[in-house]
Length: 215
Image 1 (cartoon, one colour):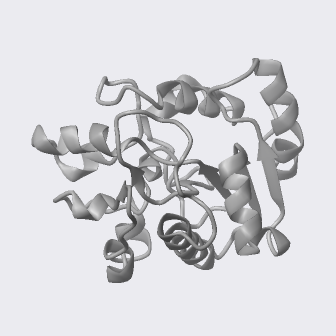
Image 2: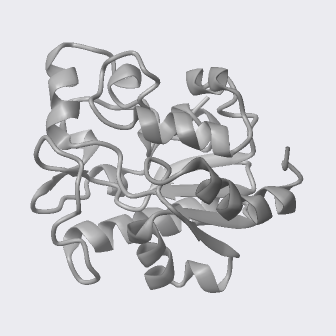
């Protein structure tokens, strides 16, 4: 299940968003049923927890999958270790662990029953082949402002939202800038791909206890 099956068609204004130096997934010749590719890992729009990473993947990696003729649901899907993407597997596998799930959750079989929606602060795909700092991603710039509009849409459609967790500084900057942090309890934790396990476990402890999921 995805945004399309839980909420409805992805709004045309989201599909029409454009930003210099970035690509909208919907301008790459595919029509995925999700706003975020990571919805296939955690995509519960009825959930109480919103996870925000920096971005999905470099545009060139995604474009290469489109050119291979893969279906949209496979192109715009989290890295689950099947070799499609160079980046994201360490982030996703460690995130699953820090949330208290076993590795099998990487398949996405808990996506719509997890109580979690997993998205990105930057809705767009950064041009290029590498995952690094976003260029021109600040208030008043098209990539940032378009992403902020998408995030506000997401929050407005999560009727049971109680907590936002930002995976790194870029996501936290976005949530603070949009004012969402003033109305929804917001936490900033280290990016899942970096640092020792104990650092992350300490950062997640209070969040998990609040959700009643502490192991």
